[in-house]
View (cartoon, rainbow, N blue to C red):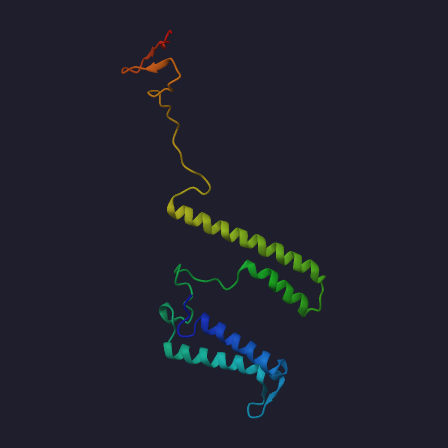
Length: 178
């Protein structure tokens, strides 16, 4: 996926840097107050990311078609949907935590595992079927024609063979007498 100047790799490096700062200076570093900004240091990555995103979207005047700021579907040229059923499990886990564990957490975890597994399997099946439809092939089927028996070549042990006209002729085996 391409996002413009800031891409997935830069985002991963940013997350690595945040983890390295936490590892070297300890997690308490994110709770210290910044004297001039009047905020905690944990807000800095968000402010920096927002500032970079805002400045790049102004400089690029939108990356996508018709000036849109979202252009991440360059492989399929299709729109990316914001809401997807795969987000149901994480949303339920979030809501359960937000409302102080209405449902036992173990039940939600098992439901989320089952939901995510079936959603992944459904997605994989859909992708395979779309590829097969595009290539005009059958999935898990090997095309074959009807079997044709080759009657012109018969084993050397047999007494029955085929002649030129398609008829059968009986050959007698010669035995050697000693």
